[in-house]
Length: 504
Image (cartoon, rainbow, N blue to C red; front, side, top):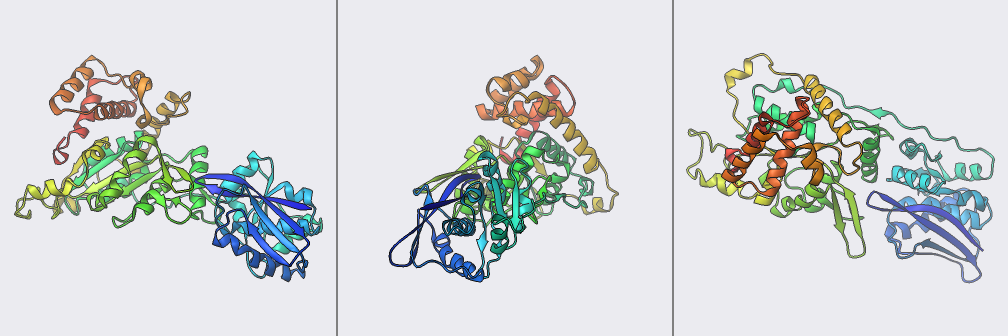
């Protein structure tokens, strides 16, 4: 007789249903696991055996075979412990088979029977809702999984509580969703002295999710500006928060089951490997570009990143997702992020300062920024030079708009875009405009079209560059609450495209 339990295996952010089959048959006593398990899954039989002993349950002197179906799907992670234990308990007729089959379970067992938290509870709850099953998980994961309101989530502290629940002695209580977390304030765009043009570029980038390149001497405020970008971004919508949290759940980054409405802000160091940025490694985990989904990816010292790492950004910038290819599987992660890059104008950093620049000017600047390929540079919608701030200006009182004031304008522009794209599932903001939708939404007036034609001819804009100027112009018009894209909007968009330091 075969008893069944259910769990999930993760492929990217997708949780695939796995059937755990347990059969007891005559023969030499043994405990075998089949179905392409990795080392952590193979070791589950020893943890299950020890946890059963704490309940004074002796395994029968029979051949125990556990199959993880589909057998050709790789099984990775310690969360298979609990479903294997449930299938075995059902095979031993200690718990009802029907109730076990109506549940998706995941959790790691300690040797004393305690349930240890595992990653991926949120995607597992999504799968449970689709399969019309309840979810059983460690109590510490319950608050995270309970955000999926369509599935009943039961959290248990140990295997004994699980047995008592299924035998009707002490039913488990349904888990409650965790707190909605919000980042503490403190940073304000008004803290940045001067740099009004860079602040304007930040506002446009936030309003339309346009990629931004900042080039300036050391200490000019590039990192300070980027750190304040999250303060002007609108909070995540409910759908975006769930989507983003599913990725963070797989990475084990959700704190106490709380779902954050703040947009992610990731700032990897320039020594990060390709697997850390793009994703990969053991289990093909999400990388920084996926952890920044619906948020900001800030890459300081941009030319210092390995060339191969920078080039891998080109496709995700265009498609909004990344595929981590492995010999036996292709894992897809969403990666729709706002890229903010910061760089010095040259290796020494002072190319524009005659008193401090090295003797290799301008060759040092061409060599340094030349590490960024033309196709990658072409994907930055906004390029802005960040000049040094005089020390006399640092004593001046704060000037310009606060983050709250800028955030209000950004939110108003995002509201306009939400209305524009309400019937288009593939577009959320102006950066997603393409094809007929771009032509319909961002067509400039006659003067703006003539200006753009002259600029394209004079500076040799690529087709991608031409379209990106139109998208930025549409965002500037939205910030002005203008239904039409006019010549001043196009002119400002062009001014951010043609920056001396980036050579057009």
